Image 1 (cartoon, helix red, strand yellow):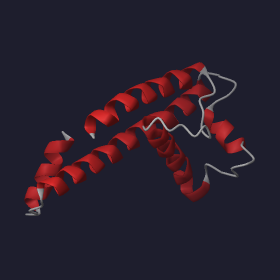
Image 2: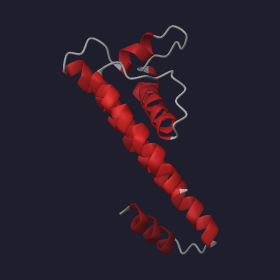
Image 3: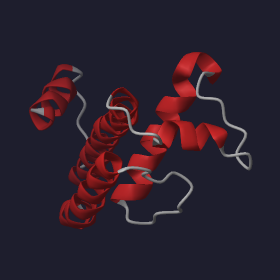
Image 4: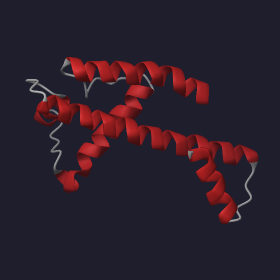
Length: 126
């Protein structure tokens, strides 16, 4: 779906680019889209954890971390989106700095899936 969209956009704009540049563009576009969706689902896991009654969730743990001084309401809530996408990139690349961690079984399950598929998917794409 996204591949066809990229092809259509480039054809409509009548942009003729080198094949290598085209592949780099597609790879980066795909990575941004995947990071966005994984980040949005990570935010959803934190919100869902609150609704399901878990005593801890990554949203509260991240915001209460005194060494970070982050407020998720900064910039109209955009900071929590950035933190979520940051988790997605760090998790999928299997770097795992440990500053955003799952705090309950639901978040741990999702983080495991992200790390597993990120560790398998990214090398396959590149």
